[in-house]
Image 1 (tube, rainbow, N blue to C red):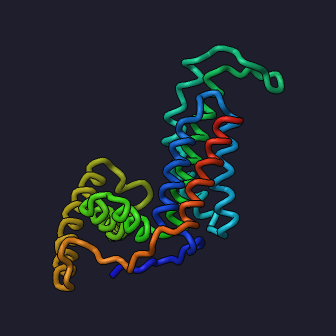
Image 2 (cartoon, one colour; image 1 turned 90 degrees about the vertical axis):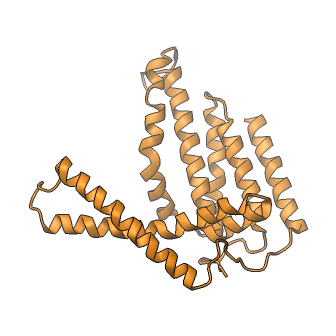
Image 3 (tube, rainbow, N blue to C red; image 1 turned 180 degrees about the vertical axis):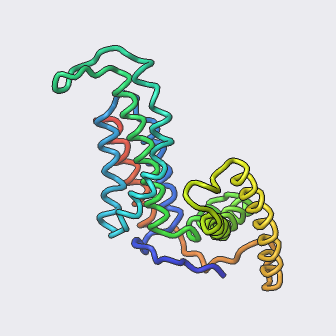
Amino acid sequence: MLEDSSPSSLPVFDGRALLVVWFVFVVFMVSVPKFAVGTAIAFAAFPFFIIMACHLPALKILRRVLMLSPFILLVAAANPFIDTRPVCEIFGLPVNAGMISASVIILKGLVSVAAVLTLVELISFNSICESLLRIGVPEVFTTQLMLVYRYAFLLSDEAQCLNKARELRSFGRKGRELSVVSRIIGSLLLRSVSRSERVYKAMLARGFRGTFTYREARSFGISDALLVISSCIAFVIVRISI
């Protein structure tokens, strides 16, 4: 049976309600028009409020957001050069339409990622997979998610061991050649396959039959419905009025 590894800061709400609220938020966030900077900033208050209200690790979430920020910046990098229509000046510096749309894209990406990370910190990945299963997501999909999440750490440990071995056997910048890196990646693949076979045999020996057994599910109550309805209304108001 899978238990929550980290207790939820919102124990009165069902995981399905939280999933629906976060999904609706991301949809509204992605639908923000490309020049609506104010609307994007207003939606950014949602994950910030949840982090503050539930006492979530803000620095941990921020570090993870910053890790993904280069990819988001890369998506918006070309906008200032594509749409060069002048819009205004800020402290004497010209601002074109592409800069504004790029800012909105960056905000949308960062806020959406922060919202997802906030949800994971809030109810744990086990509860997310359980809620997805109860919503109607195929069990094979949720099982794959659980396995990937649980055993990605094993792959990370293997990679760290190989990297430390490379550092101990090299000096300065030696050992970073393409030929060495390719051999390390190949070795990581072989060790990962071997490790996965041992892990799978251990799981079978402990009674694993292709599915996980979760804790007893709670019912979807009135408070959960009110959370979904009130959140959707708030998102609609922000989306329309700002």
